[in-house]
Image 1 (cartoon, rainbow, N blue to C red):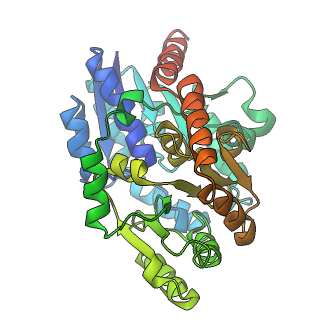
Image 2: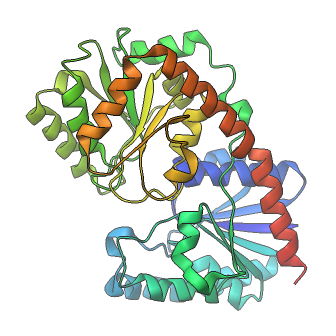
Image 3: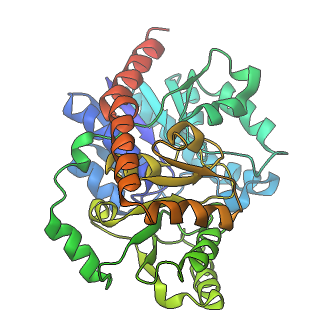
Amino acid sequence: MTILFGHSVADLYGASRSLLRLAGRLARDGHTVMAVLPGSGPLEAELERAGVEVYIRPELAAVDRRNFNIRGMAQTAGRLTAHLFRLAAFIRRRRVELVHTNTALILSTPLAARLAKCRHLWHIRESFAEFPRLWPLWRRVMLGLSDRIVAVSEAVARQFGGEGAGRVRVIHNGFPRTEFDGVSPARVADFKRRFGLDGGPLVAVIGRLKLRRKGQEVFLKAASMLAGRFPAARFLLIGSPYPGNEAHLEELKRIAAELGISERVVFTGDVEDIKAAYAALDVAVLPGSLPEPFGGVVIESMAMGKPVVGTRLGGTVEQIVDGETGFLVEPDNPAELAARVEQLLANEALRREMGRRGRERFLRHFEFETFYKRITDLYGEILRF
């Protein structure tokens, strides 16, 4: 099979890592795999290392969430025009059998697939709760340009309502168990040494720094409530802002200072050995104030045997079993978040038991081989139309 992936960024955060795992496995299994990206970045090198042909197209039209409105859509359409026919010609020339668009925020590959009369799968990893006025139009566009749609969670699938019946499949992201095995004590010690972490308990939010959506400001408020009870604890924000959103980092630093916990909070930026970071943690937190479609951080934390406290929104409720693998809390409620984290920090046996159950749940429901079989079975179904 010859397959072309379209993706909107070249970073190595959740959706990009999911693409890398899938595309790399397809290439190892003997398929011809290509990917088109809007720019260079760490994902480009990793894909090439995995045997994927990568093409950089700066004119690739990705819809920016900051411009997800009528004007932004019009600007995107303008950037599309010249590029679209070249991409369709490329699809025909390389005899691509299936185009797999890896995000809802890109139009080039779906439209080019339609022009080239090529089968198209749209992989939806986003929640559009913030955009109730524009979503009905975007939903119809996606349904009209897709042979099938994959939703990463039931919460994402519900956005399509009855219109998606028979067209939308829920396939949870999968993660290879081998990625989470064999993190040596030396790697953990190196991570701690790098950031001056001196042996006290560690609580972290991992992911892009983005106010409200990712909820780091709620986490900081909860941290201020915990700081006195656990004087050795450190509170980590692991990750960086989206390009152009650097003000979010400065605002979070300001909030930490205002709360009087700057000395207890560590902004690590992007961490290369992220598995060592997971291994070092005592509690992982997903405090977003908006629905998380299917947070990879939750699954990765569970895979590393860590309890997770997350908000009762979106796909998170499909991941965490409340009271068994972690806790679910209401959004925008730092007091409840602090209470649940305190419960875990005060009870090592509870942390270990929830971590063990989380690891078991990961192996049963979210392991990569299950995901890979479901995706490739769907590919076969599409190509048999």
